[in-house]
Length: 465
Ligand code: NDP
Image (cartoon, rainbow, N blue to C red; front, side, top):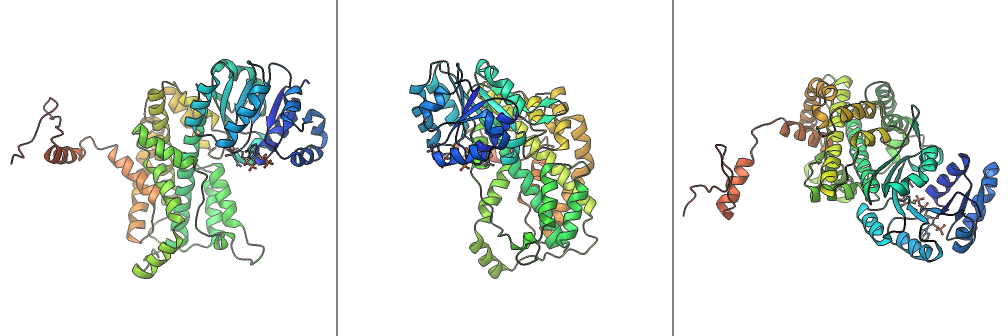
């Protein structure tokens, strides 16, 4: 009865997290709905088994943890979390802490925090997949600060390390941690999509084989684009199917799945009126990818392409520059959304700390995030595009993004995320836009009124009858 922490749910993530906790010297008690899994987990834990107490009932689990207790839930987001909380609370003391570490929708975390009342509850976003959970994830915490502080020593110990700084940070009240995790996933969607679009230009436009494409990604991973996603994209492109000896990418169906966290980000952005077109485009691209039959019918009806670009149309350096610009614009949108949510929800989300917590452990870890952390620290309220280091990069690179988007359009290659990034950039550097026409239309058909450039609100046009 002296485990420092408990954990419920020994699936992919929970098992990895429990081993990580034990590996860092903390005694942990575990419970899983299916008892055989608990047994197998303990049997396979090797020398870490000594730090792990397997239990067969929730009562045993609770009895095995030192007071005041802390228990991590790592079960599927949604009803399973509510069921576990309902089953657990009657067995716990009022000051015992429940930590939901799954991918909860932050609205659910807000609700659960309110339902918990005075009873300690945290919602933490854990990023980095199974590997991250086992050897160091990025952790985004939400709830009352005093409750975070109770387990911070464990969470920082198990988190990824970036140059001596643990990637585990308290973000704010209630669902703040799960909100930041959702935006992380939205950015992840867009980062992945932009890489996939660049791959499409290399494959369909430039006609490069997968070996060459893999080498280009590997080279980019040594420059400004250095990141986990570029690294694994190179590895995916390099892989060969053991069954057919074909490039692995040639045997993978081009329909992308999703668990919904990117979609939540897009939906929430609409509620917040936060412009994140590149992230929304990435969600759309996944939905569109699933419409395989319609795409095939479209190709039959309209033909595809013309894809092939003369070999000097776009250089690899131009493609790299386009991806750099696209990536900056995607992150500018994501951080802009976080700033907007922070103000709306009264959270005071720490933007530079968010960039820092993403530097290691999570899927979007990249060299650029270190510079983003510096830029956001220097001007937390500014748009990342305006930060001197990124403004310089965008000035150098937006012409390349423009060339890539233009050539792709001419050659019939869809670039939903990169082109949305470019449209955002152009719109955000146009002081006199075209919404005056929208306002004129709205006033014409609905007498909505408009502001005049020479002053005053609520004017109407001479549309008359
Ligand atoms: P798994 O499907 O691998 O494991 C689910 C676990 O939850 C199992 O231990 C299962 O127990 C248990 N469980 C399922 N339903 C219930 C229920 N109704 N009551 C009690 N226990 C239940 O899921 P993951 O480990 O992949 O995911 C867990 C959470 O982590 C999810 O919220 C997920 O979104 C999130 N996450 C996942 C990541 C990943 O890369 N996989 C990355 C980051 C977050 P049993 O053995 O009895 O079936």
